[in-house]
Length: 403
Image (cartoon, rainbow, N blue to C red):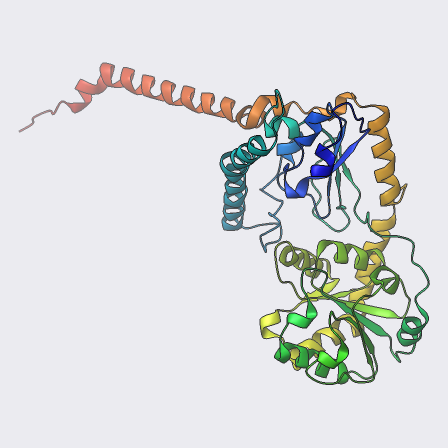
């Protein structure tokens, strides 16, 4: 931050690419450099808060919030719960995130005529979303919301000699296990680690290659001969190998994309955030099974691994998804580059400005019209009732006395 702030005000940046998933914390810096074009990028999914950045609409009736473990079509109660979560997020942005950032920014950045954080964020020209309709829920998108799911996937390279030899030596194939960067395998505890290693040992017909963040001698028991552990593994290149039969994963968005890009079924063990929704989607598509880390034991783990490998439907479904995922005019990275260059060529194109940013939440959803219609219907109803009571009220309340 200090390095950037030390640049002169007339220093020219051609473009700013901002990870808007983390919020607009650093965006006020663009004010110093006379607002170069801003492109937002997200490392996973199509987040539910994109409308804060470039406007548009979200669809809680049929798009589950990424923190919820539900699948469409949602029941009435699930839709209620989903809507509540969306509304809580909107309120937290409006009354907690933005006001808090305003105070922090104005305390540390003494910029003249600095607009609000929200105004700066809404200068974003384009969003590159690391998602794809082949693997996520389809929803309508604005023209400046571009899907580049699989952005991180590169052409597979030759595996290192020792890894290649091990992968190809599996009698019935090899299984990759990696829990990503946020979940460290060496912190799972001795009981879970022992269950994992004993499961691998009970399946000698398969080799298992495991991204484990400590040295092998730190494991609670010695790995069997069909197990290789390493602090770092070329995940993309391993998943591309023909003898790699399945992927044991934390069900993170990027890992799921890579697995399905190469048509590999998964055993998902979710831990946090979007991982629960992602593995549920994989289960729904028939490309994976879900396990709970708290209930993991040798029998459950062994059964899940054999299920996704030996039941051909999982691989067949994963390969169908792979075909859909890859069937694009350009690869995801090439698409992203084309749109970045488009913004540089056309910084003032009309597709960047959504009318919803000016209309606001109520007007852009026609809620103001609905409220007026409801109010008018109530007024008409009360008027009719008042007239009726005035004309016929006394007569209807008279009692006729008979002998």
